[in-house]
Amino acid sequence: MVTISETSYETGLQNGEPIQIDGKTCNGCGICAEVCPRHIPEVEGTGKNKYARVNVARSGLCMYCGQCAAVCPRDSIEVSGLNPDEFKPIQPLAINDEQLLIMMKQRRSVRRYNNKPVPRKVLERIVEAVHLAPTGTGSRTTGVIIIDESEKLKTLSELMYQKYEGLAKALKNPIGRLIVRRNAGKKRLSDLQSFVMPGMRWYIRWYRDGIGDEIRRDCPALMLFHSPINEPMGEENCVVATTYADFMAQVLGIGACRNDLIPPICNRSHKVRELIGLPNDHEVYSSLTLGYSKYKYQRTVPRQVAQVRYL
Ligand SMILES: Cc1cc2nc3c(=O)[nH]c(=O)nc-3n(C[C@H](O)[C@H](O)[C@H](O)COP(=O)(O)O)c2cc1C
Image 1 (spheres, rainbow, N blue to C red):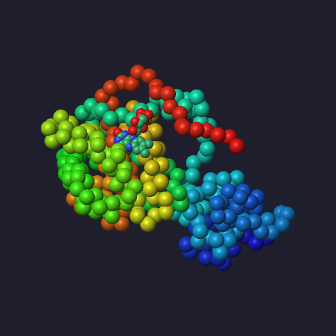
Image 2: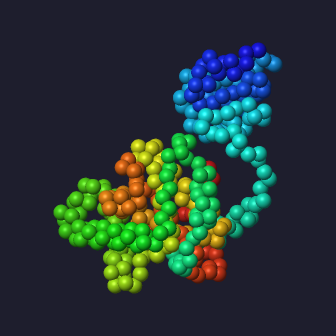
Image 3: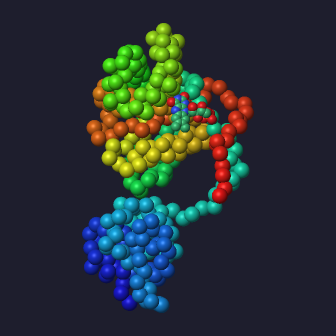
């Protein structure tokens, strides 16, 4: 019988191929081949001499998702870059569908926070959930920036208001609108005019009058999710990661709210890019304000999508 480790050496697996299959323990059951989205492992041989090996023509397509190693009944697979010790045995879930739905029903977008800072330990727990978010290409390129220093947050707010003030001024005249349309596109201009700016004009007034900050909402912590611009599905990856963070925040008793006013400024203001240390080839695609809720919600809100159809 050909041992896979020999095959591995022949195909250069030990020298940077994405997965290694242990020929001594693999029995060629083929489950890894079935679950792999790119069918990188494939089964060869017949009867008792079946074994899985890497298809070298497809190995470059590996997304390093770890599914092959996670599903292997004989623990015969290692994935480059993923520590085998961190593949943990599956545990029975302590939550059920009812508990999950209750959690989802009770989640609220929390926009009013008390002054209490969110401890780093709690933020780290939220980041643990972010690490587990699935990504479109299996890539791990999503970055998280957490700002929890009040001076930095205040500077960020000021820079954001300055930028929105400039935008409000630009949108007042046809040439300004043309420039915004050229830079941001027709759809973004329309969104700005119909949805963002009508509220923003009030926000600016309230901020300048010292009434409050309705962009950042005086959150004690802010999470920014960013991705390389050329990452396929980078934006979607950030949105999914934000949702994971949102759910974990709720379980930890931390109020959270998605905020779409913040990312465009992070991307367009050089000063903000510098403040947050955003790499040149990255954009912030989503953000989550975090803090202890000032108020306790007393009941759930009925919600449903517009339509569900079975065909
Ligand atoms: C994609 C997305 C973007 C959002 N952007 C903002 C935002 O910029 N500011 C804000 O206050 N809430 C934002 N929210 C929160 C929604 O406004 C919120 O979900 C809605 O008010 C319903 O409240 P609930 O989340 O408590 O059910 C956003 C939510 C989503 C899903």
